[in-house]
Every structure is written in C-alpha cells, then in structure tokens.
Length: 313
Image 1: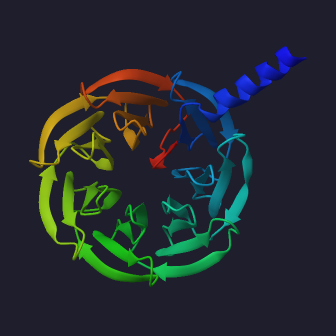
Image 2: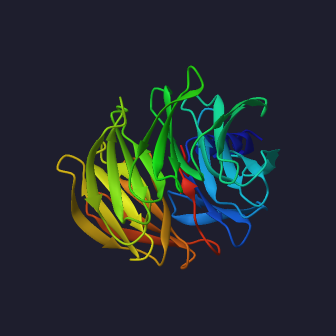
C-alpha cells in the first residue's frame, strides 16, 4: 500500500512541476491542440466551437481563454485538467483576447462592434465596454498592468487604454493594418506588426510617439520578444518566414524559414524558445532564439493560428 501511495504522490508531484503547455487554436478544426513543451508533442486536442482564433493565458488562475469569432465570445479552458469549462458570450465577433498579469481581468476585442470588453476573471461578469478604433485585433497589457494597447486594423492606429481609469488615454497612427502587438518588460516600447505596409512600428509608451519603422517580410502578422527583450521575432505570412530584429539597433539581423502561412507566435517562459503556428502547414515551428534556427516541428490541427500569448506557465 505504501508503495502505491508513494507512486501516486510522485505522479502528482510530476504533474505540478510539468513543463509549460502551449495552446494552439486550430480554426478550421474547431479545436485547440495542447503541446507539452518538454516532449514537444500534442498531448490533447480540445473541442472549441465557433472558429477559435485568439489565445490568452491566466497563469494565476491556471486558465486559458480562447476567442471564438463565430461564437460571439470566448471559451475558458482549465489549464490543469485540459477541459473546456464553457463559453462566455460577448456579441459581435471576438478576435483579440488578453488578460492582465494579476489574473483578475480578461479583455476581449470585438472586430465588428469596434469595442474592447473588460471581464472579471472570477465571475466572468462584464465590468466595462470601451469604444476603440475600427476592427480591433491584437492586444497587449503592460507588465505593471497599467496600460492595455489595442491594434485597430482598419483605422491604422494603436489605442492606449488606462486600466486604472478604464478609458482610452491616447490613439496614434502606425503602419497600414496593424494586427499583432508586443510590449517590452519595462513597458517602454510597443511593437506593432503592420500587415499591409510590411513593416513594424516602434512606439514609446508615454505619448505613443513613433521611434522607428522597420521593413520586414510579406504581410507581418504577429510579434514576440525573447532573450531579455533583445530580439523581436515577426511572422511574415506571405514569405513563410520569421524576421528577427535586434531591438538595440532596430535592424533585421536574420530571416528564418518556417512553415507555410505563419501567424501566431509566442515565447516559452525559458525566454529562449519561440513557438510559431503555421496556418497552411497545420503545425508549429519551434525556434531557438540563440541559434536562430528551427529546432522542432510539431503537427497540430487544421488552420493553426494561436493569435496571442498561448503558453501557460
């Protein structure tokens, strides 16, 4: 009996210290693939209806939020049991989704209603809905939970929302059709991937002043920072590549070939490995940020997008 009890404790302990999971939305499959980042294999596929696109992880509550544009809201996944806990209705077509670092609030961008809705993560009740620009998509919260940045694709703008006052503080023009965003750990710089102008806008945080515009590949979709924010990785949908930008010089230092139609991108908590969802190849490329090379390819589902921060620590 003691032997079996010890075995059970060891198995439970292993589960508690398991490597992070990556949650990859497969829009055409109406599913989410869960990748164990230690084994680099899909360990479960979860059904999520409504054409899932966006992903946000709540490390505090061990939950994952999946936006469903055709479902008018978002689904909540349990990060421990890997079960679908149900759907929260928003209305319109939810696309971008984010959560604050404290794990208290969930933010949902409505593509058709041109709004960002703020939900209480405990009760799933709506706190406030704010008007932003046309077709809000990517969102990112600053590390101190003070600001929420929203890419308004059709308006070619970025909105800055004050999360204390819950109102839009500033809106500024960037390149054509901004979509994915990144914010550095100090909250000093915002990076916007501009799909139609094939470039990255670099903004400072205080007044959203443009610091630089960096040309990348065809139809840049999303971005991710790695190696203590020294490198910015950009998925180029039409080139089947990821551009790597040195954030000190603001120059492209490498272009890495990945799968066909790369879209979502997120950095592992080890700050070294960068995961890229490839829409047409139905897989995920894993990039080593130190060697700037693809070190793994993981088969997922049909139409892998994973738009947002999709790795649960």
